[in-house]
Amino acid sequence: MKKFLLALCLSVMALSAGELVVGSPLGALNEFKFETPQGREMKISKKPKLIIVAFEKDTGALVNEFLATKEPFYLMKNGSTFIADIHEMPTLVTNMFALPKLKKYKHLIYLHYDEKFHKVVPNKKDKVTLLFIDGDKIKSISYISTKQELQSAIEK
Image 1 (spheres, rainbow, N blue to C red):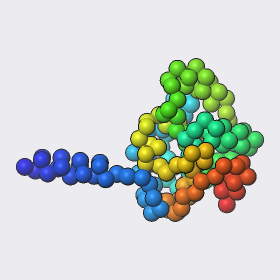
Image 2 (image 1 turned 135 degrees about the vertical axis):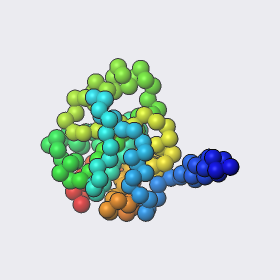
Image 3 (image 1 turned 90 degrees about the vertical axis):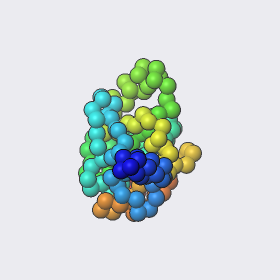
Image 4 (image 1 turned 180 degrees about the vertical axis):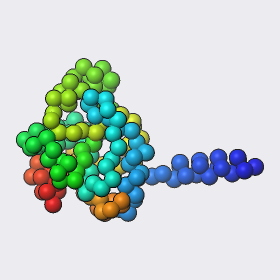
């Protein structure tokens, strides 16, 4: 009976895990697996102030092009993390074209390959998602589409 109740509780918790909202714990993001383009597994740092998330090729390119103009540790110095969700990219394209290009960037990129991520992290078409963090909770969520908005958010 105890095993049944435990299984039931775990099932309810899994089904109720929904989209991140203001006030959600930052730890919810570390339930996902992130890797660098070089294949090194990563976790979200304990005290970020901003998490930048790109879900599409064009929004990822916007962030990468902006960061390519900055020093390699620009994100880290500004308490920021960049996540690129590439779950929709075909594996062949990822391995033959995307990863070799991403490996050339000097800034740190966290890659995510699982489709569940975009169901949990809020996103809008043609927009970069910004998760502003305060302590260990999400303070606010916004969406941007320009390099100027990105720089302003990072340097805030």
